[in-house]
Length: 219
Image 1 (cartoon, rainbow, N blue to C red):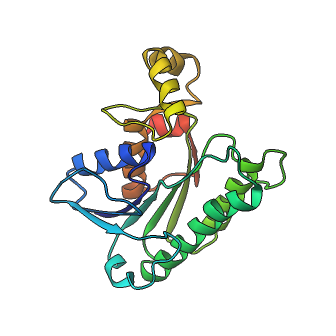
Image 2 (cartoon, helix red, strand yellow):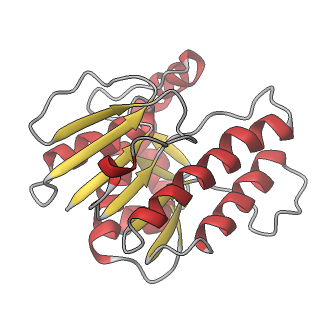
């Protein structure tokens, strides 16, 4: 399997990249982003672009891939709905629109978040925008598309958040992860489990298009 990965420098993307490089069934990973990743592997290719929403000039390099793991994303803290929509909905739909035209048979996996609002009408801004994004991606025309909604994600194996505040929380809560998973299995997962689950779904699909943490952990 050949995989396209976005957000490889972020916490979720780091975890996904690690699992892809370790997986013997994956022969190539194309990491697309604004900056390079430090990992080196014969399986890893990198495509540096200034804007994920504009892949013009790179389309020949995107052909022949089996799945895309879209792990790029930012926090909505301090953002207006217009700005958050631009870097969430607009970016994802532009990127995915290019891929579905080039590789319509591929599987597209979008990492969203627990609490995403599929009605697009709730009171929480980020949840509405994520819900709108999910809904649009599911209708875009990929052979298979899945929306992953993890809750709390514990980074493992040296994976770290680029946001210092978030990483401080992960460092503090880390020793309690097993306890949290036991008490709140619907809301807690790890970067390893999330990465492995995405690979599993890329290979075999899943019985429903939206996966919560409990689905991720079962996979």
